[in-house]
Length: 95
Image 1 (tube, one colour):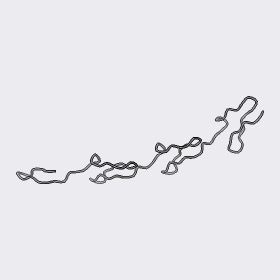
Image 2: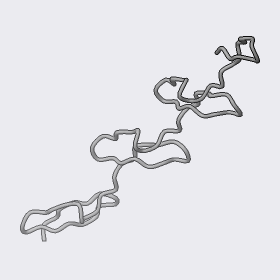
Image 3: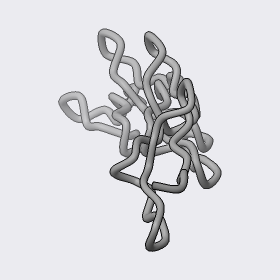
Image 4: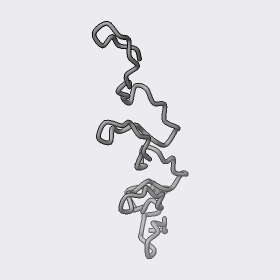
């Protein structure tokens, strides 16, 4: 930009900020010393849509879809049967 230095106009550098930088999706602007830079955004479970029957859990710094562990509390059995766990799976069995 142009600034007057006494009676003389001079070009001086503009100090850039994150407002002057447009980062691509998946990155955000951070100031490094006096320079704005685009840096990758660490993904979270808010960034991941898991399929039905699974949920998101963080594996270190990485979000992952993992199967939901069902219990008998998640299963409604018809009359005349009850829920029993078959290893890790809830099942309706006759009473």
